[in-house]
Image 1 (cartoon, rainbow, N blue to C red):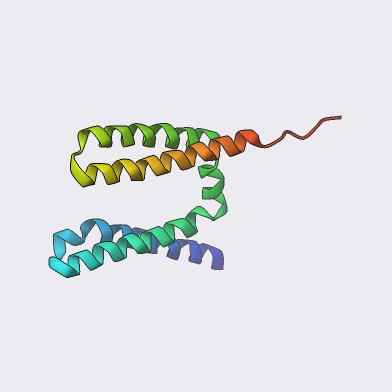
Image 2: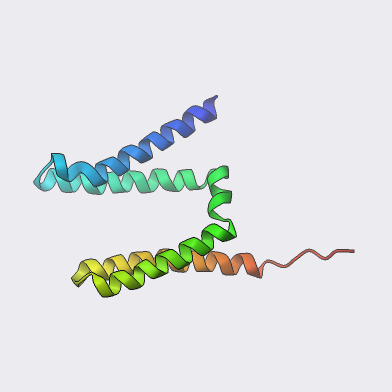
Amino acid sequence: MKSLLASIALWLVFVVGLAAGVASGAVLDGTAKDLATYGGIAVSLVAGSRIARKEPIKSFLGSRPVLWFLFLFNGAVAAFCGVAVEGTQGIMAAVGMGVVSLGAGLGLLQKRAKPQPERA
């Protein structure tokens, strides 16, 4: 029961962080908006990384189909952002998506490099 409540609280913090990062512009202006946006991003990143370390999500994110999807989709989005979005915003979006794509690609290579146990 304690683990269930901790998981629910962690997911709630994650969702609140996402909401603060995305929706603060509709409610706040100026410096308060920037603080709420960046604070929400930080909270959601920390909570999301804690969620990703827990077992059902960890094994799902490490599966080959999910890694292939992340590799191909984020690579395509990085290429699209590099061409379609102008200026610094396009460069940063392409770099961010490219880093995720490379991380998934490295995960695929690590899974492939694991030696198979010998059968007798």
